[in-house]
Length: 275
Length: 298
Image 1 (cartoon, rainbow over the protein chains, first blue to last red):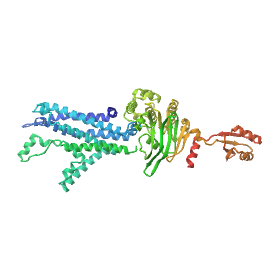
Image 2: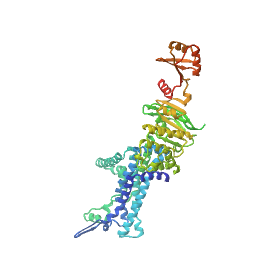
Image 3: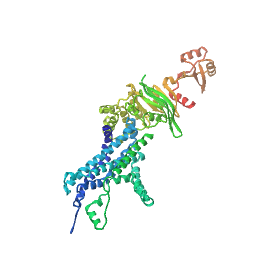
Image 4: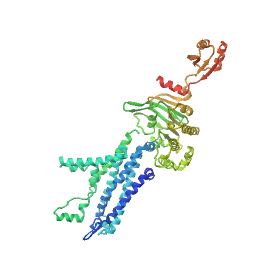
């Protein structure tokens, strides 16, 4: 296991482009803390975002994992290119000739995906903990460490998304086309969802829940409407949100299912192909 | 006899095309093998199959005694297929370190092997800055990192300039002299003739001949004869039972031997008949002539 991870890390470490992108990604992840600095002070309107309750435990776990998840696109570029480049440099062929099996090759990529996800979770955890300790109104241990489900959801979401990128890299063999396909797929899911809700509204929520990108998005629902200020504003307008913001067990299962399909699919593709 | 690679009835089809057809041969330890064949005869496909990068359609093969999986066995094999493939952004040394990790061998041989192929002073240069000849030499160094039981080279001198070709050949000879089994695929016959003791000849995916280079020489060679007295020489040659076909090329007669016969014995017989020769030469068909003969008739 460690050997396979090591092999992949050598490949990433020595490439300047991946070094810059990985560093950039974790730098941006840390920059979530900068949201705390958003402050408007225009005459009578005083607005300090950090004091609106977004950094309150346990809400901060929900808010930060939701925001951090957007940055995953950065790592998606790395994942796609670390697979597609093996094709374009023909180093995949050389790796196999040197005695790596196809299974080990996929495993080394998948372990890297897991590693990236674990480190991202740790980063978000540490950054959120520090921010929370500074700005949160509640500081009891029990409250700080409640709602850890969002970190689990974040982890499953990253692993699922990166596995999808890995699969696209193997399937399409060109980084640019694979990323293009990712955008195309997102559009396709969007259009299908629209059509389903228009033509067959009764089954639409059940079907769209199984779309890969949609199921990943479902893991951590938007936290905006949960914010105290927004809630009270809505209440005044007579609107009431009755949304369940929890990470749903079924969504976790669906995304894990997709992860398994993507990783096995990558292996099956590689096994079938002549290089 | 230690078999290194055994291939039985191997077949590979790409759609309607049969690239390798029912191929069988065995590679024994210690010999230098050449796989000969025109372009598209299935050499690279065969090597691709035994190296785990091309899927076979039917048949089977196994490395060594067959007790290990292919990818495990490949760690005891050094192979270069067509173009050298490395990570362009890594230095020569970093690339070799990665290969060591894959093959699970210690990294202490890297400098020694770079020295062997004459790249020690360029070990910290990125692969993308190398010339084709240097890339090919780095590939050889990489294939030797594990002191392999067999070294497989597929067209190692393809696309190189004369100096490059010469360097690669010298390296191959050096490795062969150390007792490493070598399998060399090439369509350059003089290359194979210079280094190989055994050959496998392929044409359209079918094996035409497998065995030693000497054994391929089924004929006893031929004589080139010339005499001022053409007519007498011609009739004398026809009378002699040792000769099969006799061809004329201008004043020159080419007489193919049916049995082993010394040039001096021929000279003696002809002189006794009063024929004086102005030229007498005994030759054996070159590998190229035999190869063309073999691939033409089938």
